Length: 100
Image (cartoon, rainbow, N blue to C red; front, side, top):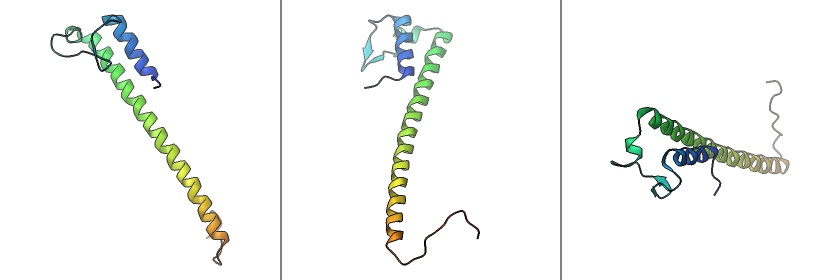
């Protein structure tokens, strides 16, 4: 699994704040009542919130890029199929962008 830059920043912030051996649940710092995270001051907590938002944004960009790549691939395949069909019919070729 590729670790995003934001996730790397989060891990570095967690290690610097809580230590590399901090309690983790499924790889995430314990944030519940009584945890070290729960005792952070507002300024420190804002740093974690900012990194969490950065992670969400990176995830959204990655998902969007994958969706765009799939759409571009589907578009290219559809164009090729249409071009093949167009060349095998008696219908006039469609020219886009030339006078109306």
